[in-house]
Length: 484
Image (cartoon, rainbow, N blue to C red; front, top):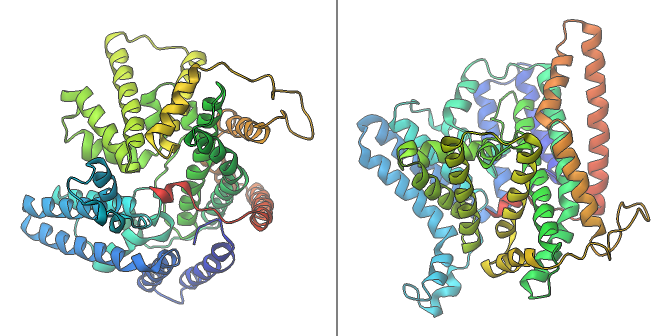
């Protein structure tokens, strides 16, 4: 089950909100609401593949047992055991085939290789990192041991379970202990608006890009001749698709949290407006950036070993996204870019003007998406090397025809890229929009507040209608980060 599907929008979510409304009306307790949301979250997870539900429950139970030991004895060995357990679980499901293929049967005989090919359990990268962070915070005594039900709720809360944002217990659990839920119309409306904006990003922009972007990477993977403009279309096309898909998911997750009276951390802040690679990683997948900084970069040496720590952190961050050399290449590219940016800042200090820094950073980020999207290092390199090929814009770059700004073999792809880049670069992001609307809905003047609420309701209705109509015409598509 995904957020952008009829079962979720027309059945699961209305039932959850109806149960939530019982608590708002005082008919059930907050404790019962929490248990009900835990059950709903487990149903949500099992609807994708129920075979991995015992894996999730086992991971939660074992981590909580280790946390209890850690809170009473405070021995580093329990923390090490917890980290080894979580990384071992992640490695077994995500990296064992990659390691076996890399070592060419040195550790695993060829006849046993088929047994290594398993479907990646949904969300394992996210709930593994989340629980590692909890164990470390517990060992640092930054959090106290919660009740078991609270812990299960913290890990399995369905808006963030599958693809983040990566939430810390110190951010979420205090909210459910302090008069939760403190329901307000403006908060619910803001959450609904974020939900609808995220749905529109995913269904109306990201999903239509899937087929034309996939065709380019399939051509490159098949060894077809590649023109000079193809890598740019492949990089920018996937960059737009991934941004609207993943930021759309984050908007929906945060919106669902607000609808249920909880605040989840922001995960995107207009990353394609960044002035440098450093700025980009402060804006893109913010919760992952904070995790890598706090639990990897700083323990590796931080500023004392700045460049080595940066490279190792980005290489491991790339490997976290997927088991393949292409992900290591992507992480390495960003590691080198971050090292160069920090070196420039420390030794030169001169800031590039925005009109030059933003497009240069954007081009680097977009072209770096090529290995991230490619199915192999060979596909990635074929596209990257094609940057030296002569461009063939003019056979297909033409004036408007049949409703599209350009025509030719890549007309739809280029048009969607221009639409997505225009939204990402020229307009406020969804969080900024909703912050303005929420301020208007909470205006001291009741008349202005009601008017703002009506306009938000109209906008949500229009977006939901467009999304539901589009879902009827196209197959349901999972979020891209479900693969990681």
